[in-house]
Amino acid sequence: MTLHRIAVIPGDGIGPEVVEIGLEVLDHVANKHGFKIETETFPFGGEHYLKTGEVLSDESLVKLKNFDVIFLGAVGSPDVRAGILEQGILLKLRFQLDQYINLRPVKLYPGIDTPIKGKGIDEIDYVVVRENTGGLYTGVGGLSMKGTEDEVAVQSMVYNYKQVSRCIRYAFELAEKRPRKTLALIGKTNVLTHVFDLWERVFNDIGTSEFPGVSREYYHVDAACMYMVKEPERFDVMVTTNMFGDIITDLGAITQGGMGMAASGNLDPSKTNPSMFEPVHGSAPDIAGQNKANPLATVITVKMMLDFLGEFDAAVEVDNAISATLTGGIENLGTSEIRAKIFQNLSS
Ligand code: IPM
Ligand code: MG
Image 1 (cartoon, rainbow, N blue to C red):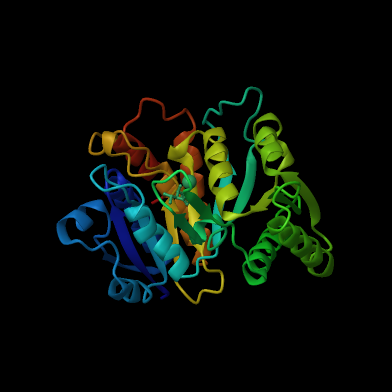
Image 2 (cartoon, rainbow, N blue to C red):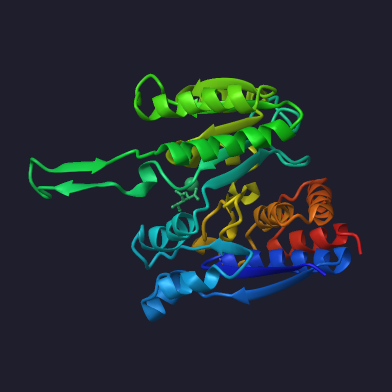
């Protein structure tokens, strides 16, 4: 029997509530599809930091490396200064575990409203491949003459060939597996002429030599935002930098029904290190513990995790249960009611 070892980081706010449901779903499909799940829970997050002073130590990171995947709820606490947990947990895991792809599907499920007039499930179904280890997120730069009129602040968009090529190659492989076989590079070649010279060259080189069957498109990031609203049906797979990917996936999330519906996988496709699966939403402390959180982003995240682990039948079952749960809508339903609907729709 296959065993999957999962490190669970429920985190703060609504994180533990949604993760609990995600784990129940995992348990259910594991029993049914004949694989085993072994979990260990780790306390990282705002509360743990305030209590112990640990954000995420190097020793803890070594422990996490022993797992197949990491399942993260959300980290963030109003009592912790912005940046500490984001950098110390989320970005540290992404960078240190070389999770170089942030995979973010933008798919409208049936039964969910999109704020885009006249568009539905046939028009909103694409995937954003966000580069996840470089760019503006590397923190290269600094402040000089702080507090004076001459103060200078620099934060550089840094990319090397290896980061760009492995990300673009992954995106082509993904596009090749989808019916439309279309990959759009999202950049800013007209202004960021150095970084996107590299991206565009690598995109065309790899596309021509390795993926002749995949159509290539290019959009400036600002135009891409416009089309994501005006004509989302244009897109199949998009590939872009870390910062642009962060921004456009919040826009994408709103078009798929909001942050409560957006899932993501931080992947090391080489499987050298564990990949990490997390809903895109934050810890939402204002609604924590009130039966208000939508657990579906987390359940979609579980589906992505199952796909990554090679448990394809289980992934399909979870996906079908999500679709069935959404038929008739989930408006006005609380966390526990949505949970109950999910389990009604998971076949026994
Ligand atoms: C995301 C988040 C993070 C990011 C923050 C919390 C550091 O916005 O996962 O999209 O910028 O990547
Ligand atoms: Mg973001």
